Length: 341
Image (tube, rainbow, N blue to C red; front, side, top):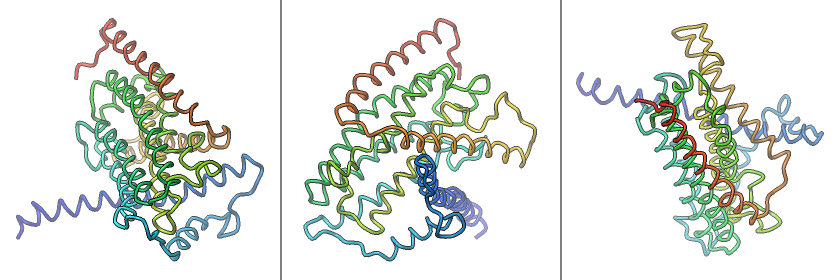
């Protein structure tokens, strides 16, 4: 019995506890990211935003969630019922499981695998399946057109993101996300790799279908994109996936380019538990800054045309990322700065 407890049950309970410590705050963050978006857009347009439900409108996300829970989920009679329901579940699940390898401090991570960045790239690539399945299972031309546009958009930026990640790996010498953060002790990667930082941020906007690349949801063009037939909780799951992916992109940007949990100039005034709190505060602060930038971009730029989007992905970002990859490799070899581990 003792062997079963220490060998199987206790590690399982610890893992479940770690998962809950990440997923529960993440779900709360997703809910209140919608509130933050409405507030940021409102202030950008000289409006109030949510200010009725609760003090300063802080209970608005909870009211929205309750409203969705009690609404009826309508499945079109001609839709493939199994795939129709499975699509939003797949999208939301992928947005959550990606956090398994995101480190919050040295050793503070659910799964500290050596190929963490490859795992993230694979999970982000799978995200298109939920959208394709939703568009096809709806048995609607409008939904299917939105799904195809979204798939083409995501694929066009996956290649550029791949080259950006390889550039970071050349500088860090490791696929492990913790090692990538620790490689930035001397200088955060956004300084020497600034063009790649810009490409990654913009590609992240397109990858998550966010403005100004929210073409799959172009209301005036294709009604509402791939999720036009969805309602209530199934519709909510798609937007939980979208906002979860926005937070994930912010976390990846922070870890790959902004030094993760490292403070500027390696200021570490605390050790032990307070040291972990200090690191977590810096990580969350950087993530919140990138999240704000995503909302800022939405409030500033108009929606791109589809041909402009494709031209940016294939004719600008792809050659630029490939050129910067070759340049980075050449500089590292010429100067002898190639990481040894």
